[in-house]
Length: 190
Image (tube, rainbow, N blue to C red):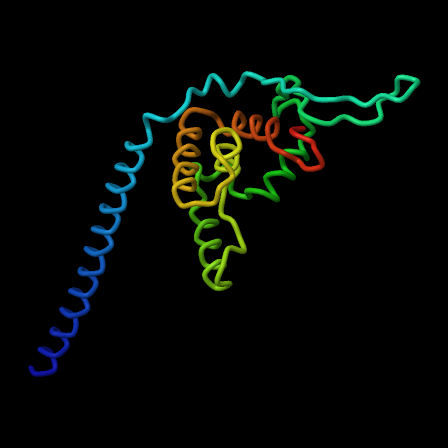
């Protein structure tokens, strides 16, 4: 009889610990959700119109010509027309996704796994050694935000990324990214 009371007490402790953990997790999720909705509502009035994204802005550029008229170099921004993902060679978007955001088609604008990995790596290194931004977050930063590295800018970037994900398809986001991103050596877009 004493053994059965001990087993019963041990099972109740395990159940109560499990219940407490489940309740704690539930409360944490609810608090996080409420905080996130509050932050989102605070920044929502500032969200820009998505129609502006499809307008190509032509900025000044310079073309250096040789005496015979041959192009020696081009510097500055030369805006052209937007090229859709469907018109690009399939390996180009695949390569960008493979290097920048492997889970692009499976997240909602924030890659939780990539974010957790970056946080873990940065904590281990004692500084910023890895980023956790998705293609959508990079697009949001390039289109709307400054390059400053602050927590508020990162929150705005995340809100804008989720906002873009709700208004555009993944292929539209990828099209905008490939047509607006800085590729290095003075080159913008594909």
